[in-house]
Length: 90
Image (cartoon, rainbow, N blue to C red; front, side, top):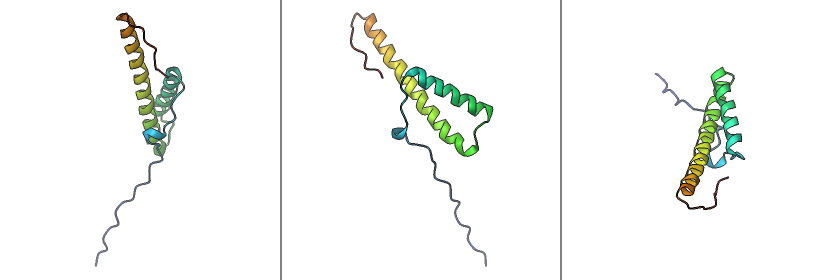
């Protein structure tokens, strides 16, 4: 008689969720961290179990940078229209 196979168990991801991510101090610090992450991933320096965590951090940093750029772009558009409003960026 054959025993049924047990379902494969996967390790719980140690990656922080979007709300648990540490927000960078500035666009420049986020960009520097993102560039460092990309370089380490490209160089193959990270163990397999860390790739997902670092990829998710990179995605968070990329979104942070995009949000910062969009805020500045909006402020520039307001200035171009002759409307000066305070910028609510980080």
